[in-house]
Length: 152
Image (tube, rainbow, N blue to C red):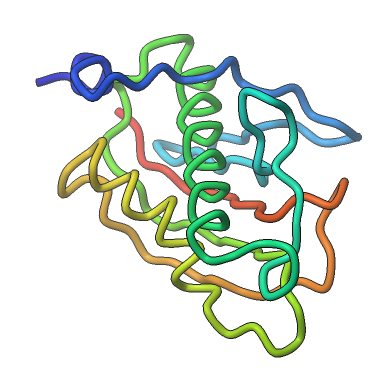
C-alpha cells in the first residue's frame, strides 16, 4: 500500500508545508537524502505553546510532537514535488522539548513523533533519534523536531 493511501486509511491529512520563518530553506537534498529543517508544534488552532514540567504534561507534549511529525512529512512531500510515495524511510529525528530544568521525560514527549512515523510508515518509519531539553524554543512552542529522510 502506498504511503498516501495508508495516510488516507488512517484518516490523516497532512498540512501544507510551512514556509521558513527566517533566512534558511525548509529542506536540502544530498543524493537520496533530504534534510528537513526543524518543524515547530502547530495545530488547527495555531502554535502549540507551553513548557513541559510546568504548563504542559507529557501527553500534551507528545501530541505537540506528533504535529511536528505531520509537518515533517509535509516538507518531505514538498521536497518530492508532491509525491510522498517517494519516501523510502525515516533515517533520524532530533527532537527539542521546551522543558523545565528538572523535567526528564523528553523521550516520552518525542515518542509522539516516533510512534506516528511507525504508524504511518511501518518498518520504514523506525529511525535513529535524539530527544533533548531546551530552555526555550521559538515563539514559545512546546516542541521542535528536525528530520533526515531517504527518498527514491
